[in-house]
Image (tube, rainbow, N blue to C red; front, side, top):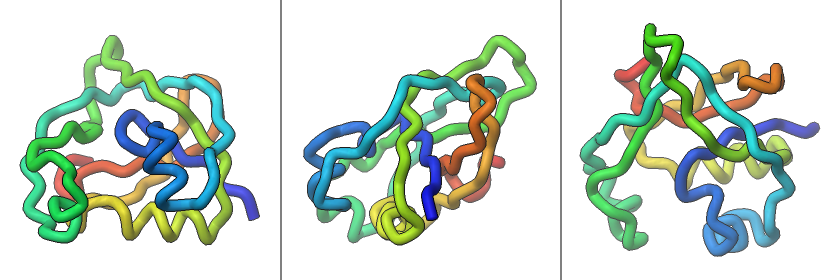
Length: 114
């Protein structure tokens, strides 16, 4: 079964895709309206051990209709989505949203920001 995953950060990098999924992902530019990026401090030791920065940007829902986050929407398998779950920091959660294009996609956001 195919899933869609919106990325605004490191999952857009070819090297991360190859490490996680063993292949480059197929995707297209898209945007997420009524969200903005906000800094968050990561405390997940496993995430930081991979060399990721302690301060990351996360999606935060916004009431400001002008807020928009540009990114890529990727086609992934259900199994690859579970792999992506293990990649993200432990205080992130996956939620389904509607992108500007009308596509439904999963995003990762800090657990306390939605």
